[in-house]
Length: 267
Image 1: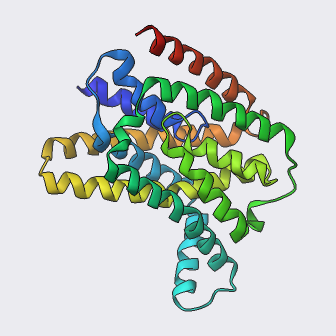
Image 2 (image 1 turned 180 degrees about the vertical axis):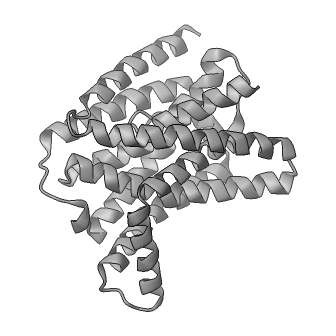
């Protein structure tokens, strides 16, 4: 059990900030190793650990967002912090609504399918490569507009498909709108905070309602380990952008997607 939880935390922490789909990898663990499905509760706990890591790493930006929310409440919509907070809200609403509808309808488990993961891994990986190599890099994160925030939010709904990669999808959207690589990653990480936070709260309420104490203990351990792995992976990701493009991640996604589809078709 301990080894299983460490594996989950490592996969989540390392892949959350790389455009290769953490959810897809987490869904693959029971499919490819024969280990029991960790379930959505432990899944979200792993995301909670990585959420803590991104909040800590981007603590200055998070402070600006908090001040921006206060400005919005006070009616001060013209400040830079308020605009940042407003853009984050606009980018979050679509995926939260879509995610809630999918979960209520029970489609979340249906999507955790090897063929779906393989196709999403390949397809969205190729789209990331195309956007990164054909679009300009004229915009910066400081110039994030409300219109682009809405576009990012609509794109982020595709990240509900395991294998699509939330960071990969939002980075693709940012590159399509002309944001540079580092700025695209920065916005993608900030957009992760409210989305993952909402998912964590929902899952926690469900666990409390069910009185599942064992699941809570497992979740706490996974969250702590995921935080450590994610913090290291985030620092590595930011450092890699100084020398590399997203191409290595795309090559990995295409190869992984081919393997997953082969396994699915042979089953």
